[in-house]
Every structure is written in C-alpha cells, then in structure tokens.
Image (cartoon, rainbow, N blue to C red; front, side, top):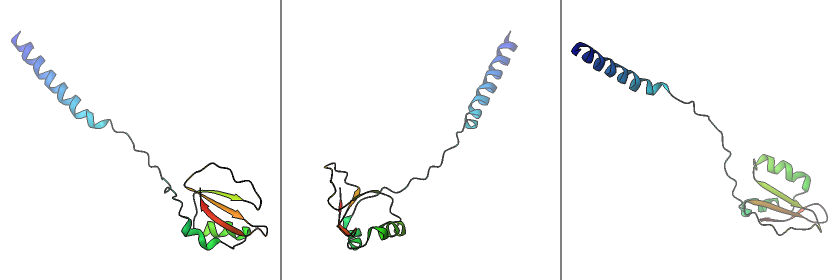
Length: 104
C-alpha cells in the first residue's frame, strides 16, 4: 500500500511537470498588419496647388502620395455643411483651376 501511494505521488509529480512544460507549446502566430499612417490635414502644405489645373491635380497628389480624404467642388457647386477635420477640400473656379484649398 505504501508503495502504491509513493508511486502515485511520483506519477502525479511527473504529470504536473509534463503539463507545465507543455504550456509553451501553445503559441499563436501573430498576424502582421501594415497600417497606413493617419492623414492629418494641413492646408498650408497644399497652398502651392492653388492656380493649378484640375488635370494636374491628380498627378500632383499622386507624386506626394496623398492618402487622405479628398473632396473636389466644381465652380458654383454646392458645398455641404458636413465637417470632417482630416478631409482636404478643393474648390475650382470657372476655368477648372484650383481657387481654394481648406480642411473640412
């Protein structure tokens, strides 16, 4: 009887060590997600676009890797009152040139 109790204690210790050592085997693979930097609208950075044509606007924004929200409002177009602070809004004049640049 004493031999069985001693054997049972040894067996339980070995099982406990086995379970503790298996804890490291349960790992999860971390998913790597590339996050684009958050665009912060700074209208001073885009003031040089004023006077440029609408056709050149797409090329210029592609060159500077613009990744934010953009709203282009044609001449005599309706400007909605919704305000999104990180959206660049560009208004055009009657010749399809950029007349005003602002955030919102």
